[in-house]
View 1 (cartoon, rainbow, N blue to C red):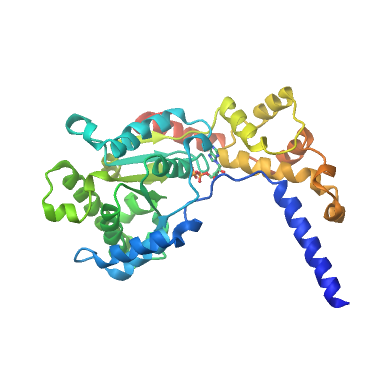
View 2: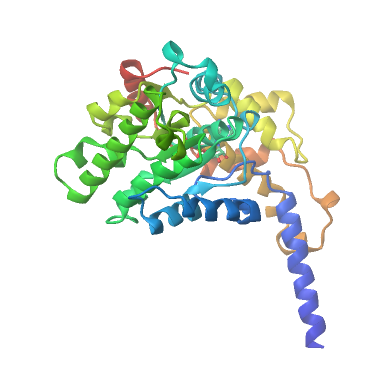
Length: 368
Ligand code: ADP
């Protein structure tokens, strides 16, 4: 009967889904922007209601609600160990953010933490992952916004949004405000009257940010200020692939500028090992080393893309047959799968592009 056929089709589709899913590398992270599942938890909903009732004067309700819905990221935590390499950057972030957030009493006076940190480097090197890692490890509320969406999607509403963003960050402190693509907000071009609205958002952002620093510096906050939240435990983390586009004044506000470079061989190796660890594979140690050599110039996200593609290798030659096969019958992933994938998956940064980052890092950044 047609019902029976439908059931069969559904069963086959389900089997396919399971096979494919089981053979894909697990993705330990997700990109900023997609909110995790427990945004809907009752506890969080109650907290939001409470916050909305106690919004400081001058903060737009609609904007605040939008931030609670779209900008605060819940769930899908990233831990330090999920991030391959970048030991220097991790250390700098621990010292600058994690420890001060967990032990504010130890970090006063000379040890007063920086109010902002810039992560710069080629795309796909783990800047977003680091920011999420910081939020997880410092048990902070994580606000993630891309500057280009501020200047496009929310244009017109953006100033209200920026004000609400900082107000909520203080109320929900400790907080990390993560601004991706910060260059599109703080570029020298936006200052020269190209876009009046963009210039206004930039100004508002800089004002809110300095207020934060001032409030934090004068720790002796009034009781009224305290009610509004803890400015000393709000930090702006920003990321950019185009550090040279940020204007000079804005650049100087980031006391710390951390270079997030492409992964070295040993880091690529450990990332590949992690990606393959839950998979059936047959790569010998010497093949692994060969693969590491072949992926010189790859970013972390290129490596992930490569491993995902190679993991499809064992299924590709099967065609329809895979629908009827058990997990055990699927052959392991081999070095040849990687070689085949390397034809299509190439590094996203060129040697020339890389030199620009190195030069900028030498002049303006900390390396690591
Ligand atoms: P960026 O913000 O620097 O552009 P992301 O942090 O968004 O890069 O990384 C994109 C994806 O690439 C991540 O979700 C992850 O799958 C992979 N990736 C990038 N860098 C690393 C890394 N250092 N360790 C593990 N995975 C990484």
